[in-house]
Length: 415
Image (cartoon, rainbow, N blue to C red; front, side):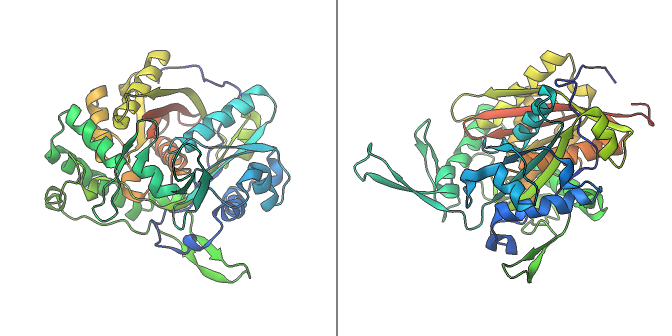
């Protein structure tokens, strides 16, 4: 493995001190009934206890979400209060880039020396998302009511592009994917082939128990402490059994069909970033070292969000001298199958080498924790194959692509 200096040399992610809920689809689980922020704060100690980490060992908290929640003004200090430890910290929000951005910022916090053990807690609930009422003197109505999930998916305020129909299943995001598919002259048969391949990857990993290493069943309690139910699966995922099912689907836009797009969902994901010494102390496998070696963001032309990630990745590779062939694992947040095909064209990279154990196109997209779960999955995969470089990337609202490369070494395994 080529040796590349870490972006934040003092910061390490202790292997195994992480975890995620499963991501049940919109309105398919009892998560729709809970205060998701409070639930996330209560779930974090449960997840970290799996590796015998106590919340008192943290000295800072970075939280991340995109959908408004009760008492969001109080952000990370409130969340830490909810799990019983008074920590300083802040909240971050960058649409679908939130999860990876929070991890990057946690690395920077440790590198600065201001704190030594930083918790990252990301979450979102698209079910029962709130509507906001905003005074707007710039319109004749003087007041705007915004449904946080659906109205933001249906209108891009920076371009003025709009178009949303629940009945037809159309959004501005669909148009973005379709427009990019036409630019790169994608063939729907290849898109369908990739979709079927992605579903096979996910179910093979799930059936083999690979996802159980970091996805934990979580019991949901009501305000009286009584059991409401258990979230123990990515509810809402369809199980396609043949390629014909994809090729026969109606295209909602160019190369955009139901089986080739993600769905709104709910969930949480968490991990730690700390110093080298504390990483060895906290990790159940201290011989494994994980560091962020590069990150990048790129903003594409308006309305061409799926191509942004390829250019973000190009920037990272140029900075580090690495190539796609140096990557042991490549995982992404792919709201549309179009994303992966376009990436393969921009980077001249085989899409079959990506997302070995799953991706959000299949299991869903709760926004805030999506790229956190993608990162956990990529790191677990890299550890399982003996180490190397793990690449994670994804697109976000505003035609932005975000990407990161992590170096995983195993002192007992030689990498």
